Length: 88
Image (cartoon, rainbow, N blue to C red; front, side):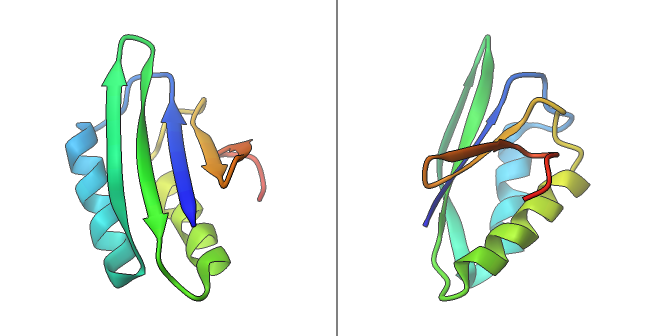
């Protein structure tokens, strides 16, 4: 399952550090597959590789919130976009 994280404000940590933290968090359940950044924000692309993908996604949302992502972060799961801080 594909998850895309889009943010439009400055991250509190370098994107590479955040990607590494996500990789560590996911372990064998998924991986960061790409990302980028520019003047208007950035993105991190993730592939969830778990039979219980919905549970992993819920945990990932909470993990990202704990990393204090910008308030304007968008969490996109298979084309369904929501603000990260909205309830799932």
